[in-house]
Every structure is written in structure tokens, then in C-alpha cells.
Length: 470
Image (tube, rainbow, N blue to C red; front, side, top):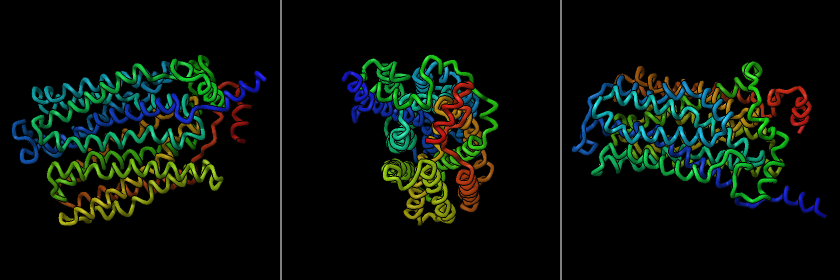
């Protein structure tokens, strides 16, 4: 009788429990991190245009080249700490690395207005560089946490929900920035908002965040047993897992890993080109002022958030009903997210100032539908290796963020005249080409089965073979 009761405990868990709270906290943590990254994209429009900003604050006459340096500066630092940050998250757990990265970066956001006043664009570049260094462990930390908290059948829903914090943070920043820049706070208020939002999140995360179910003191025993029993076949229990050596050679000779890396690079190039350059495109080509600019820039990311939930429900429905397997689901939704936006991207390069409404519709399709890929490549790291999901994310995100660094620089080289729509057309063609080629590779060579190198020790190879058959 006692054994039956224990089995029931393992099989049951609350519909809403600690794992959901952790995902909500990670959602807002990613949102906080993104507000710090994207605040400059809109703020720089106000900083360089006295007509669209509060006239009581300084105006800066930076060239388009300098502007591209500033917009890419965050990623110079962000790239450097991707792999070291993932190693720290793997060793010490994702909670502390996520906390320190976001909160310390927030302090620099609060210092940004003073820094740019004292040292012009050079100090601003340095501050953004340091913020990138601090935030390098963000996504590796989240992936490390998800691999300990989220069940296989919940990856589509809860895993994707966490990363919806990325467009949510973008929308939040874009919506408030136009209002803040035109208020008595001026453009400095944009940086203050991002900093304070991140610090408030950090306080809540410190008290309620946890590395693993075992570390969470306030969750129910039933839910803890449920999660640990469900994950026992894919990740080794602590503390052995904390000291497991990373199989670097096997990772770097894995075809599914390289395909995943290329897809993430393409996604990141497209995402950060759009998010950093849309405000400038709106102002230069569609002739929108700072307030309407921020609203129009935010609309596609609002659609991105809403469609994320639609795609999550659809994916769960198709898998639970047995219409498609996990592997097909990953490739199907990645294809929707990459190939559907290609035609709208190309058309966007042919818009005129009097077609701002049509341009907005195209942007909503491009950015909104792009979220389907979150159910494709974004959680494929955990599919391939739950034990090293954070490290895989550190590697792929590090490579991908070379794209984040190069994308605004490339725009700066291509778009020498921001009012020339033909130059913007080239930018959109490049994104479309990358989307097409990299998704084709993912469809042909991507995998979802757990790789044998997830279990470095010899006696674990049998477990790997068993998991591949499931």
C-alpha cells in the first residue's frame, strides 16, 4: 500500500507549481536583460534628433558609422563571455550566474546617462561593452536551469514561454521609450527604466529562484518527486552531474550540433538586425516621429508574443494527438519561422513613406511568424544533451552573437545613406537568404534524439542507446 502511495506521488504534480513559478521568473529575467540591450536602439534616435526628443537634453551629432559601432558595442563583450559563462552556470548552477549578470549590468545601465554626458560616445561604447561581458552567461544559465526543471513533454510550452521574455522585453522597451523620451525624464529615463526593472527582478529572483527542484525549499514534495522521476533518464543526479567533464571533441564533431549552430546564427542575424535597425528604418524611410516610431517598432514584437502561445498550443496538440513526432515538430515550426518571413522581408525593401501601414503589416508577419522557430532550434540544445544544454547554448550563442556584432556593422557599411531604400533592400535580401539556406540544413540534418556524448562515462552508453529508442 505504501509503495502504491509513493508511486502516486511520483506520477502526480500540481497543475501550477514551482516549476511554473521558475519559468515565470526566468521569463521576466530574460525580459529584463533584453530591455538593457534594446534601450539604446530607440534611445539613440532621440539622442541624435532634437526635434523628436525632449529639447532639454543633450543632442549628439554622431555619424552613421559611429552609430553602428554603438549599436554593436554590447555584443563585442557579450560574445567573449558566452563559453566561460556557460561553464560557470554548469559548475555553480544557473541561479547565481543569471542573477549577477543581469543585476550588475543593470547598475551600468543606470550610469549610462552620466557616462555619455562626461565622455560622449566613447564612454557609452565602453559601458555597453561591459554590459555585454556581464550578460554573456544569460541564455546558458536559463538553458541550464530549464534542463533541471522542465520535463520533455513541457519543453514546447514552458521552455518556449521562458524565451518569450525576449520579445516581451523588446515590446516593453519600445512602448515606454517613446513616451519616456518625450516626457520630463528625456532619453536618460529610457536607461533608468531598464536598470530599475532589472534590479527589482533581481531581488525577487534572489528569494524565489532555485538551481534545481532539490534546492527549492518551498515546493511540494509531490512535485519534486514528479520532476526528478521524469528527468532521471536524461540527466544525472547532483552532485555527480556538477563535476561531469564536458566532451568538447565529441560536441565539435557532431553534425546535429553544427547544424544547430548555423541555424542559431541565421536567426540571431535576422533578429538583431531587425530589432536594432527598425527604429532607424521607420524614421528614415517611413518618416515616423519618435512616439509613433516606438509604437510601430513594438507592434511586430507584440505579435511575436501572441503568436508564440498560438504555436505552442498547436505544437502540443499535434504531438499529443500523435499527428507528428517531436523531430517533425521541431523541423516544421522552424520552417514556418524561417521560410514564411522571406517574401515579406523582400517586399519590405520596396516600401515608400506613404505605405507605412503596409510596411507595418509586413513587419508584423516577419517578426511575428519568426517566433515559430522558438519551437524548433531554440530548445534543440536540450533535446541533444540535457546534461550539457547550458554549455551547448553558450557555444552556439557565442557564435550567433558574432552575428549580433556584425549585423549592425554590416548595416552601417551597406546603408551609407539612411534615406536610400535601395540600400535597405540589400539588408533585407541578406536576411532572407540566410533564413532559407540554414533552415534547409536544419530540415535535412537536424536531430532531436539524445546524443551518446550526453553520457561521457562508458557505463552510461547503454542508457543513451535506450533513450534513442524511445
